[in-house]
Amino acid sequence: MQASNATRTAFADLVLLSDAVFTGKEPEARPGFVAVKGERIAAVGPKSGFREWIGPDTRIYDFKDELIMPGIHDNHVFFTGYMSMHRGLDLSKTTSVQEALRMLVKYADALPEDKNVYAFGWDRDIWGELPEQALLDGAFPDRAVIAINRSKSYCWMNGAAIDKYGFKPDECSAEARARLLKEMLQDKELVEAEFLDFARMLAERGVTSIKDIGFDDYSGLLPVLTKLEGSGRLPLRVHFALEPVLEPLNISFGLECREKYKGDQLRFQGFKLMLDGVVADHTGDMLEPYADLPGITNLRPVDYEAIEAAVLEADRNGLKCTLTAEGDAAIRRAVSILEKCREQNGKRDARHSISDLEYPHPEDLQRMAAAGIFAEVYAQVLLLNPSYEDAYMAEVVGKDKESRFYNYKSMLDAGVTITIGTDLPLFITSVPDSIYAASARLFPDASPPGGWYPEKAMPVEEVLKAWTVNGAKHCFMEDRTGSLEAGKLADIAVFDRNLLQTPANELREVRAVLTIAGGEIVHDQRS
Image (tube, helix red, strand yellow):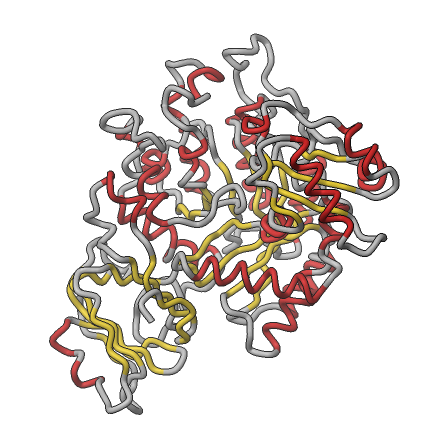
């Protein structure tokens, strides 16, 4: 680690010391210090140089062998989805449908009569049955009631809610619930409080920056974020992308956002478009038929022509796009669409991306790299399955092809720049969990011995880069954040042990102990 100092004007406000400093510029963590002055990093260097930054008011943190690294950037989150999973009555402790119904009736009695009744967290496995609509219709004949389950796969709803919001209980993806979510965002004071709680939760995990996906015109949340930024109370960097759901992709609004939201704290990052669905339920678009559904490559057709037209128009206007694709056929079409952008609109530093990338064909990874397309992967994804024995991958494609799932090594070998997201609330951001799943290649029960296709793993240092340096680069922020360098914004995370050396069986115990965003301490476990 080379000493690196900004122009000295005063002593540091903070000095962080450790035997494990991962700057993001080198693959190893080395002994060193980081000095912070104001909102920026003043110096980074070997431990021998820290004393010259110490003044009478400097706060010194000695982290021994704990890991100091750049702040975490989650490159794919969905605050509105998280909000909807925490709004209303918590049913997670209920053990039966009847108990939940009694709680809902009591909860509703305390609400104004014109307010919807929201609830969350119930579990069919605990209840032993799927709740019936008729029970809610009897208790609430005229008032919308929506209770989403723990896995976000089913909404217990009454007829009033179904009629009002136009989605079915077993079709409750965030996109299906778009009208409901838009309505939930209208209470600005409540949304502000919920977002600040959300930011505090992420700070406890070392997160200093996110790319948030918002529907259509980001109605409800964008004014809240603008207000927080204007008053200096936005506690993490928010990059946002717009997903057209209720309305067509709006180029004019995108251009307006690009001009208006381009600061370090709140910045527009283009559009996000869904291609296929989910491989696990056979709505992912595949090149070959599913092994467990002969002759079927996708249960839900994709209108690729409409998506291509929208992406080409966005690119023609200089706007970035993220295409969400899981199956290898959808990924291939996504690559082709983004290649066509270059062919028709000219080569530029677009930094388009493809997210999910569950089951890519190796040939398409080479094409992604050649076209400069970024990857947004969910590195915690193995943790969706309780164990290797319960995992679905071999079932849907066959044992001989399951190793193509989550093939991070082939992405790296092809030269694809990998970023990491969580699709939060699918997962809550966890760097240690991502190393456990993507590097150690283990399921929650630590199966299988030695890891699941360990040769496909992402090395730990690459996982850390994907969370930091690469995420900053994807958001055109690499000159400001993403690494520990003098002059950059002081976005820093400290974990309670060296993640580069932590045994797999200890990884999920690791916690962030300090988070600094723009020079401000936003989480300090030891204070």
